[in-house]
Length: 101
Image (cartoon, rainbow, N blue to C red; front, side, top):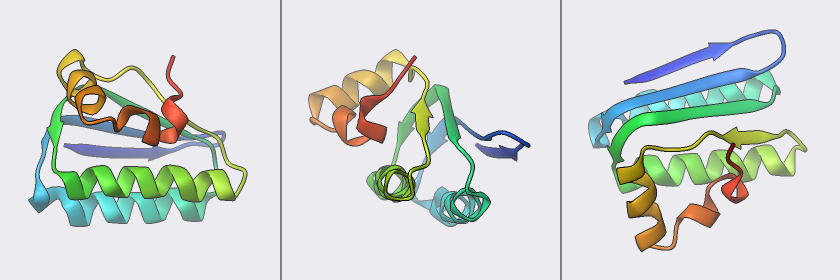
């Protein structure tokens, strides 16, 4: 599941469950809305179990695009399963410069 809430101060992107290739168009649309809003991003993904590599690429590209624009992106702590996968493949530091809280 992909849920985007763009508030007055920040955009909050919540990802839950499993993001497969079929969810890619929705994630791309959310990423475009986040970029257009020009507000800091908070990524909530503690309930995300896994994601397709294409969805991961969108998140990496979004983080880099926001950084180029000088917009902060904060990735909250992911689920333990997802964190282990990202660490195992050396991708954790690619996502939003591994900023988490």
